[in-house]
Image (cartoon, rainbow over all chains, first blue to last red; front, top):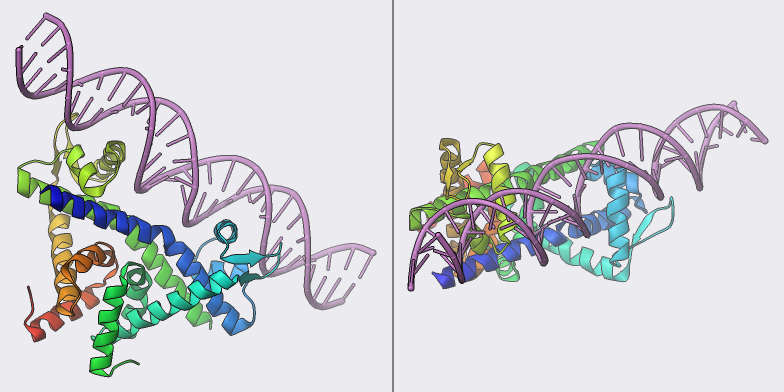
Length: 142
Length: 142
DNA sequence: GTACAAATTTAACCGAGGCTAAGTTAATGG
DNA sequence: CCATTAACTTAGCCTCGGTTAAATTTGTAC
């Protein structure tokens, strides 16, 4: 039972760690996406995409800047640092894998898109490998 | 593109809603589990299981009480209300389905347990149906 | 009845992530 | 050059979920 408790406690610590990085991952991923589509990313773009106020974006971006993920100029567009770009790439790949997997098991596009936003933050490398193996075996990687 | 934005925004609103209920679901599920195993559930039990301080549990339980999920007596054990019991049942079933599914696709027990704690809060009813159909087709419901 | 230990409650603090309101900056059009 | 608009920043607020420290309550042993 003590072992049971220790393992359970470990799981919840892990979940809290996942949550702690979730916003960073979402912002970094979105900045890369908007930059790729429009040439640049501004705070107002993020506010629209995340359905939050512009102030929420300003404050969140300030934290990302402090942690070295983005660079900003006052009143100007945002850019990812080299470190941010690497994270964006990793997070993007993870997102695509989870999305493809959900669709492969029959989840509709709309639902798969929505569920992926939350699920992607809680899959271990091992689980991602199983998703990829499943996709390869079922040849449904689109 | 505007449609793209609206859909994206919808997904993040959905994720925030999932997060808003996550702690409630975890506590209600855990209270039911501990009560089933030990006959009663106390705050210190939850603090151990979730790896948080006893004060965190006291405050969180106060919120659950305010929202009608649990009943408490000062310095006494916690009990779920009828509404809490119904939620616990639903959440438990969801947890079991996600866990069984991850194991069915080859994720190790330990990793599946850890990932399920986070994933369970982000699966739609449709996604759960696909998980169950997969389990039935593959006859790996354990 | 007293001492002690464990559990719970209260107080105060923190950071994250959300908001509204007001002020500032930059770009644009006339 | 001025007015206007859109975007951003600052100030202040909120809830949630976490902490430590101190006080209170309860149960148990002697």
